[in-house]
Length: 294
Image 1: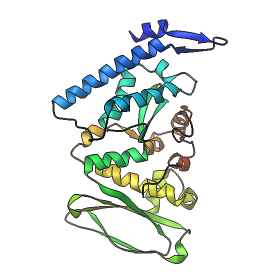
Image 2: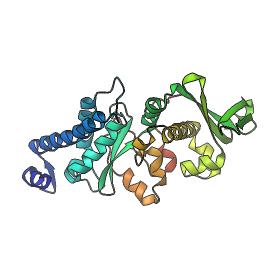
Image 3: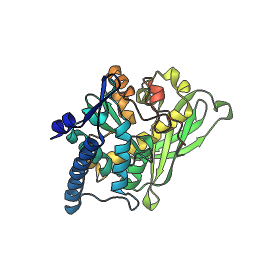
Image 4: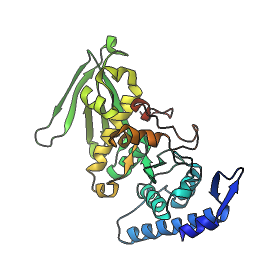
């Protein structure tokens, strides 16, 4: 059905080097994909396996996603809605809806690479999922640990949970060498979750050398430790199975090869104003002009 629509619903412009689906073809694709996604949602909800945040509107989220996808192109310049199969597009949208994410809120983006359309959860989306799935209260608190700071934490031998003992920053360490970072998440019942990253972990997470951490910038490192803390809670939540196999921005650094990341980088996002471009420089991949959440 999709191949027939693609053949009948194309129109050539200019010198004929590019073809796009006409309005009728796009409407048919959107209608079919929406029906598939909603059918899956109804099945999950009837089994009691899926519920949405009170302010989440599935129809609006799907509409915004299709607007985004209509501008998305693969590295060769083909429209994502032209080369992506209905099943592939439906799977990506279902990932978005299951996580309760919205393109308009910059909680996710779609990327065309590896011959498929994939949903990528952004830093803000990871925080949103952690709030919904893990009950995070308020904003994450993240701090840089500088060379010379008086920093100490301990691990409870019974529970394995970390606890911050003290952090007294040294004035002369501010803006200097970065040796670590930590994030505190507040949960219900007065429980706190502490995530601490040392220099080796930060350099591995960002794909940079330890001596380049200061060049990465405090904002980038703070975002990384917040993202790691939220992901760890998501991965250990009762609903963890729902998020298995779903990508977020940090996964682009661990896809195995630089070409894979470079291909994703050339995916062709809507615009600089709509969504931050993913760069081939690992440091830039997690950097954005969006307002930080701390």
